Amino acid sequence: MASSDANIKGDLTVESTAALSQTSITSTDKNARGETGPTIRPPDCAFGWIPTLAVMVNYMFIFGASNSYGVFSTYYLNQKFVGTSASTLSWIGSLITTFMLGCSFLTGALADKKGYRLTAYIGTILCTAAYILASFCKQVWQLILTQGILFGLGASFLFAPSVSIPPQWFSKHRGLASGVAVAGSSLGGLWFTAATQAMIDSIGAEWALRILGILTFVVTGVMNLFYFRRVPAKPRKNILELQAAKRLTFWLVSLESFAMYTGYWALTFYIGTTARQLGGTFQDGSNLLLVLNAGSVVGRILAGLIADKFGSINTLLLSLLLTVVIEMPLWIKATSLAPLYVLCALYGMVSPTFISLNPVIVSNHFDTDVLASVMGMTNLFSGIGGLVGNQVQGVIYDKYDKHEQFTNTIVFSAMFVLFAGLLIACLRFHIIRKRTDKRFFQKV
Image 1 (cartoon, rainbow, N blue to C red):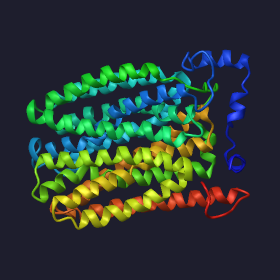
Image 2: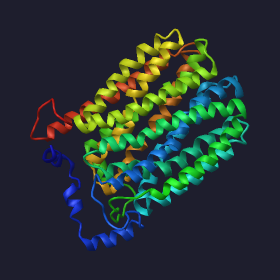
Image 3: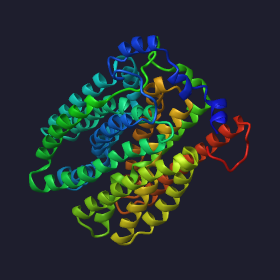
Image 4: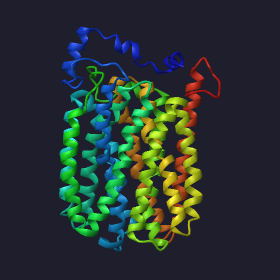
């Protein structure tokens, strides 16, 4: 398997990385601004879990905001901005994801060039400012600028270095490490959702935003100290890693990311409103998001373990197909809250595996020292997909579902997830075609 991977990757191998000379270590340590520690450590060493766990904690705050936005969305739609269209309010949540992912092609390059910690601390400051400013906003357009755009931009500075740390520290257990790190986003969604709902009910949305801002500043500020690189970045002339754009693998992963983010967020944004339509309360909507995020914690770690054994592409392809099978019948046919809980548990376990496995796929086929840049370029497509998908879903809900159901919105979401699965199937075929071993059933 190692030899066949080498035929298609053109990447640094573990052996070549370990063979860096002592003189180059001295110079590259300087370029890495001290972020690699005193020596270049081997992959799969115990030390790698320190930065990986720091990433997991930061993911709680990076993705916790978007994963729990359904609580704010339900509050805005049904209480604070009653009469405002869903498509207008969806701009807030959409722009969090769009700017977080879409700007990472620049913040990823900055992380590789200027250092992980500096980039992350810029993100900490911007995210904190976004929360505090949003707490004083009285109109939707003000929240779009603060809770949407400014927070999304800050999250991009935090996300770009975070996404590339676990894959570069691990080889044999790369899927598991990435799954553990990304599970932090679901853990964040769990307590963010519960805490946000509790704070809105007890002290109001304004103070909820301020407290989230203070927590973000303190916790991510500490975690950023543990952002160590294993392999220093190479000197570079171009901001973008343009060589990556010449490879079909890059385009297939990028388009899959676009398709998934176009269809993925529908359940997160609208499950609370679905619960209200079926006679549930605001708390029921919050509880459904809790179940969704709890399922995601289990699913992302389990997906990493399965990917290490059976292959990241095989695992991702299966999960995308299962997502379509789970989402359409359970959501469309739901007539009570019970099916919604089953939907959220299964959807949470299966659907978000692409978030943990896409970095593994990229790291398997591109150089580790430019991983933040390449992931940033693929995430540009993710950001565009998030913007397009959330806005179109809002229009479909307003115009075609007429605030009475979600059938058309669900079909739109599921079809893009299916399209993402077809793209990963093409990627699998492309990789096997390049190998000497062309068996259909093999680890990919």
